Length: 466
Picture 1 (cartoon, helix red, strand yellow):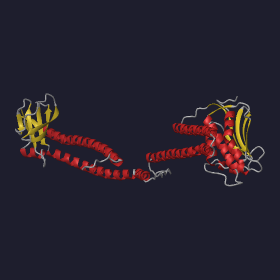
Picture 2: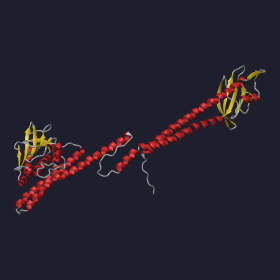
Picture 3: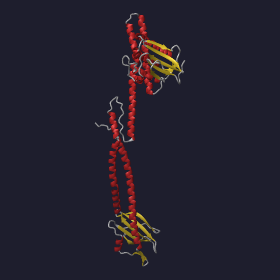
């Protein structure tokens, strides 16, 4: 069974692309070098061959009214001596008749004007370079000198070997060095991959950024940004779970209390009344759950909450009626102020109800129970400078100013009698809901310096009172 190999590594890709282009440039440079070397080699040999032709032409003179080469065979051999190549020559008249030289060298092309011409020829299976020189004198004649090209080829091969061999060696050294350099450059990516692979689920701490290149550094920063977003999303999920548990606790407790009360009575009318209360509590719990889901989806999508006109006075009255039995049972004087005048704000009814429930739950659970004398919790709706202020205040001992920000943290609660009002999840939710409603929220002491007061201001763009 053959295992299918995955895609090549980044190091292999970079090395292949770099070496491919280096090889192409090297090959092109080699071709150019060979061409230049061949051209200069030919020029050097051709010039020497032409000099021999001029030297022979200078020894052609008129003798007895006819042209003759004034050199003995020994002198001709000395003039054309070459220890590596075979050299042939001919001297021909204007009519092409051979005057001197080797008959094996075929007749050269006729030149009608003084000058020279080079050409390549095959003689006896060997390659020759031939130059033909036409000379104007008392009588027109031409001199041809042919030289075999084996020495030229040998020099060209040596030039190619001595010029290309070092380049091949340098290319191999460069490939080895590139392999090491690329491996060092992408080492941070391997470390980054290892750090991500070994990361435990739920661990959103930033990965270490140790990179020598901007790309690796930017990749690590992007991963850290992704981890931050994932941590924020996970935190949002945890908060959503906590919010659901906290918000459903009150209606579920009411349902349980109403069911227990109905089971203690045999009057069908009491049963009917308690069943209606259970149905109302279940409906409210469903509304709260639906709103939390909608808020979670809106938060993920980054969309704003749709605010609509809400009668704040009516919401306060209903909240007070919901908590009145519990307040009476605890001996707390629960009342409302400013609800006789209609007050309309731009908000969301479910969030308003959740804010009131959390504030009243907090006041009855922590603030009022530590009050001196009869505990009092007051919910007020006031008009201040064209804005509507919703406040909940108790007459408990309150909390020091330095502990006010601490109370807004999730999970922080008052501890025992005298500890003052606690925050826990409730006040964190109140702050979050107020931000969604674009309503500033403040926490502090009451007007007389006693107790604890939470105030939420509604007003501004898109809001009105009535």
